[in-house]
Length: 272
Image 1: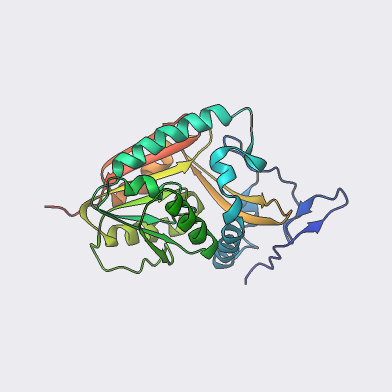
Image 2 (image 1 turned 180 degrees about the vertical axis):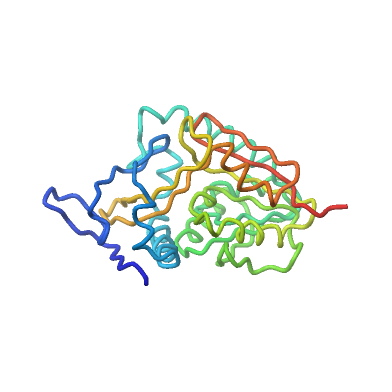
């Protein structure tokens, strides 16, 4: 049975926003390097996975115009205690992403295109895919500002609309942590299907300081409008991400960056 989500703004007696059917527990605004402390397992009986995915798609569509705040550490994401290491880590990751771009690359869940322009600097061709129309609009604007041309496609990361071995590489930025753990194997299989054997995959995501394994939460995400949305967040440390990727990877390397990010590179098995 699908959970009865209502993704507008309800108010409790303190005037704070709470998501319908989830107001038995208080939340904090999520921030890099700090967990909300929410116990996802407590809610698995009342949540429908596909309904949650659809709600998250709506959330990211609504969030598109303000997603830049997350990268710039402004607005809701201005956190003095973590801004400096966050921005330092982001700069390091940008260098990695720019160097990764080679051949024909698929940018999965491209969002506002923060990484897309970097990939396009050295790749012979980039396809940027996202499900949210709002994200694709913001991506198009950012690419135009940077004078970059790529193919923008609306599509599902879970059912990539491409033939086998279409791409030389794939980049996945800030998306794996939103994939339900029971769907990770199917998602990585799909990535491996569209990337040629021996092709490279780069994953970049946020993590928590000192986390080595996996921590799964359902978070309450606020927007500037005051609307709140539930969002699944699966934080991976080095050991947890290595274990998740190992069955689908050759030459796997995983490391943390500034204790707030985790990245992984690997090659798709099957090359002779």
